[in-house]
Image 1: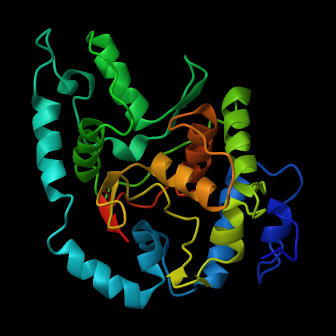
Image 2: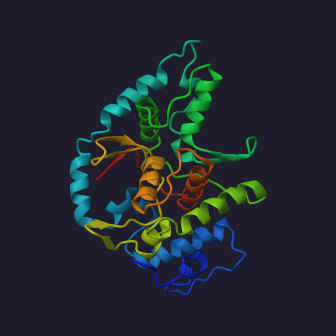
Length: 280
């Protein structure tokens, strides 16, 4: 369905009941504040921490079914197997634990890596550890990669997302801006943007599904999706969204998708990690 207003971040935020308008030179912190005010007006009953549970934060009917599944979650074996992998030895005798002394660090990703001049995500950091120990990289869809992330996310539960954008680093700001631009840009045959669903229409229905809010979109991954029948990554979900609007998909951990995750992570800063989780 065509939009009635342009997908421009300033125009979106001008919809706030409090008439919160961003200046044209708004930076990451102003973006974050403006979006939070927007959702506060849209869902006044919610706290920031509530957004850790995605759509189940705002869809009370779906939340009941989800909570029942979470009593005996299908991702539980992956956490156990991920812990075994994490503590297992590489051929050289070292372990993932030598790269990550504390496995509960999922809340720190994505982060800006100044040395590399790019956004570093947890899957890339895991493969960096493998490379440093002369092991072949894992595919980002490999079950071992997802099990490791499940274990590390589980050990991070309750910790606040700590993605930061150093505003004195123009390269970090550019990566954030590129991620933000991706989020607001229309694409595909349906002429949708991420913001079409998760800002303009958050809380509304598309067919039988309630559309989630932008806040907390990086908090609960990896996810066991019932439609997939297995664990999957945030970037797999990005790719699926692009396919659904008939846009060109991008490979997992491409620069574009890492920058997108960086934007989402910063906007969700302070929301507790709740992964791994279950989704329909």
